[in-house]
Length: 120
Image (cartoon, rainbow, N blue to C red):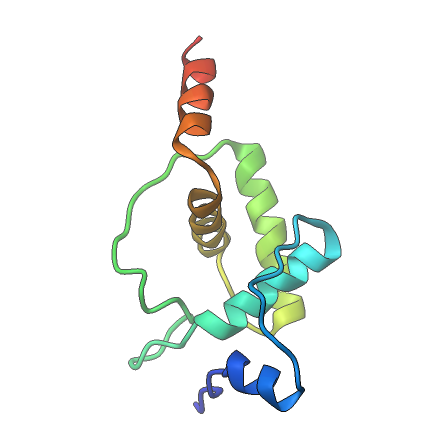
C-alpha cells in the first residue's frame, strides 16, 4: 500500500505567499473533530507487516482504566474519525492522541489542583 507523502507546511506557505505563525487549535465541535481527523491522517501509518495504522512513535503500551461513559465517547469519536477520515482507528488510539494533546496543554499547577479535588 502506498503511503501519502508528508506535507511540508513551510513550503506550502511559501508557495502561497503566506507566513506560518503556529498551530491553530480547535477546541471541539465539527472543526475540532476534523482537526483530529487531519492529525490522524498525517501521523498514522500502516505497520510494515500489515494491520491497523498507528503512530510509529507509540512504542509503550499501558492499561488505562476507563469509565463506561468515557469509553462510549471514545467509541463515538473513533467511529467519526474512521468514517470522515478514511483511516480506521480504535477508541484507545483516539484516547492516546487526546492524552498527548492534554499533557502538552496542562500545567503542573492545574494537575495538582485536579489531583487534590479528586482525593477529597
